[in-house]
Amino acid sequence: MKTYWFYLEPYTFLWEKQEKVMLFNSLSGTHILFEPDAATKSIVSSWNNAGNLYGVILNEADIEKASVKNLIFQVREAFSGDIIELCSEQQCPLSLKPFLNFQKDRKWLANLKTSEANRQYGEKVLQHLYELTIYIDSVCHKDCPFCSKYYKQIFCCTKHNNDFLYPQQIERFLQNIYSSSVGRINILGGDLLSNSLLPEYLNVFNKFGFAKNYYSHYLNINEHARLLNLPETTLHVIISFPADEQKFEKAFKMLNGIDNINPCWTFIISSELEYSQSEVLIKRFNIQKSTIKPFFNGNNFNFFSENLFTALEDLDVIQLNRRQIFARQHINAVDFGKLTLMPDGKIYANVNHEALGTVNDDIRKLIYYELDSEKSWLRIRDQKPCIDCIYQWLCPSPSNYEIAIGCPNLCHVKR
Image (cartoon, rainbow, N blue to C red):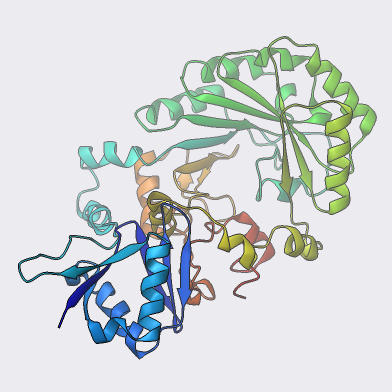
């Protein structure tokens, strides 16, 4: 009797959840979803056994079964695997199930508990730091609605307690992370452009080769914006609603008159009406660089549900490669590698969670604390209801919106 080797390609992911099986091709983005019967269940079980080289031996009787025949057709049609006849001397083709060995980093992290002074670890942990957000002050005389909440969902200025960081504090902090992987710094405040020490802050930031992104509310745009005409520097102008069109126009004309400043205009919206108003402003002023950032205000759940929640049709067309899937299984793509320094000197991995420490602490130790706690950087979809969903690792990482809304996911597939 002839025998066959039915195998999956190493770029094909296999997931099982609640009597369902998904085969996801990370090259093409195509997937096969089926409910296994007794015949195909044994095939899936063999595929899941790492010692079987992502394959299973079938005989002629096996491949004549309707469910097996259909599965073979689908797998070959999707280029997610193949079936070949085996000769007596022939060895099975080598194919390995996609697997990322994260245990090495876990052990490495655990070892630090007994050797926190290890210099090699200290240098290595800084490599996980990619982006910084620094609030230099918290002083502003405007009264924007939701001022104390915007920054907990998106990049936005905020004010509280009149705290501020001295330029010297920031310079020491940046020197301490200079050997890190930081490539971008976001610089905010209350009314950033009205800070009397702005030239000193700029002088500090310009000593470092990071890409610099300054954020200012359109109501706070003034002549000091000219100081941001610098290399590797981008000004982001924040617009919250209701917007004063005359003041918006004044800010636009002022920035339009400054050479080499091409700001990005960020519109914070909470409704479809505000989205339409944003579109009107973008069109009227011929704005070339803009972004739309939704904001949950506590009363617009339906707006989020109708426009931002993931639907089944979104997942059916998603394109993810092996690297992206591995990332979603082990790290939070939204938070990982990012720290925020607030004007009171406290440092956060996510401003919605408790502070890791202060600007005076060893930054390496703070990163270790965050990796060890798994609260922000390693916050993944390993909780209900996502853990029971076949699409678990195709969905984006949990974001600040889930925290603000108070639900584990933004999804219509699994509630």
